[in-house]
Length: 368
Image (cartoon, rainbow, N blue to C red; front, side):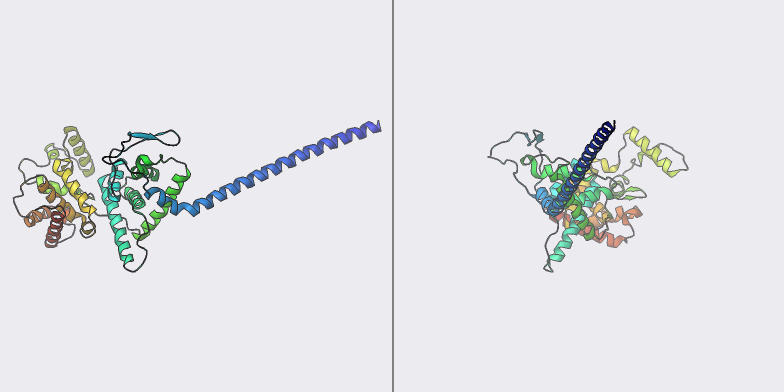
């Protein structure tokens, strides 16, 4: 009986020992696995940190193979990447960074105001770099293509048309590289390195701009509407008999001004009454406004209200219309018709500045 009890006790101890061994083994394996995962993550962070700035500029700005030119071998409109995905070939490609900015803003459907703000940021950055270069300091901190993405990202936020960085990076990469590179996918190491670099460059751009990203452009809103639309109404429509604001023909009585404006807007939409900026000369004026902001000399030296009047004047010439007065009288009559156009500037100074801007535009585009 005693021998049976001793045998059962030994067997029980053996089971306890084996259970303890299994628990120790499981604990050891779990600890080693956690250590492996931690070291792997840490190694990945270190590698990303070391290559972020170099790789982002390299991936985004380095052009590998461009599209075929006349006389070279033709390619099909689409090709496959290493994973078999079809990479379509854009029909329109940018030839420089400013064209990339314009095409990218179109692809992500940003308003023209965002494009003009981004151009202002780029000009301010280039002016800063030029001033630093004269002091024998480095002549560039951000490559041109990364600068475009950074400027457009900031501009989209300041114009309340915010776009995620992913929505800008993927089409920008495709516009720069075209079919010569595989599609930029996420999450991947390539995308992560480009994105981290652009975020880093965006911080640099913010500091160069001194965190002042507000812009006064022809697309800025005033108490009477968009500045460029006000200029168009006063320059083209208001002096023609029978063209008074068509929405005012509908008699609406309301004490609430905002409710009145909403009601008028609804009636105008139902009747197909468009804003002046949506007409032919309005579209031409927008085109000339963008041309103004593409020139550093005009964008940084003239205010938004001056550029608005100069753009409408040049649009009238571009459309082939006959301006029956000289530029000085044209500017005086348009500027004096609404206080929002002058924006605190006296008429004489405003006329002089606008005349200078018009002459520069004529010289840039070989117009008389």
